[in-house]
Image 1 (cartoon, one colour):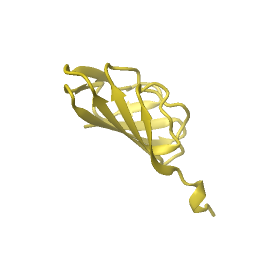
Image 2 (cartoon, one colour):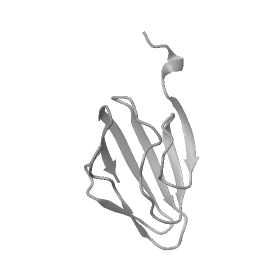
Image 3 (tube, one colour):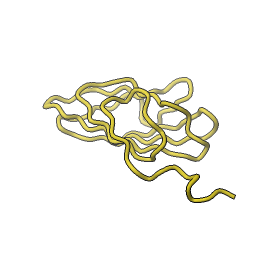
Length: 105
């Protein structure tokens, strides 16, 4: 049986890009000034999820592409606009090995 220390940390990873996102904690806060490619540093386990808060630090909105091919199935289309000085949430759920549902709001 798993012990509490085998579960992923509920802390926060802070990043400045969506490329190669760390998966050792459930929450990622991304401070962004432009769109980047979303990818994971390593795979999540089945049933694990990643909550990404993408914070636009600029005075202009930008369009963030959402992956919708290969390992990713987007339930929110192929992009989302992050408003000027705004935040969007991107959630990833691992539904099977290296296969993810993505939702952005």
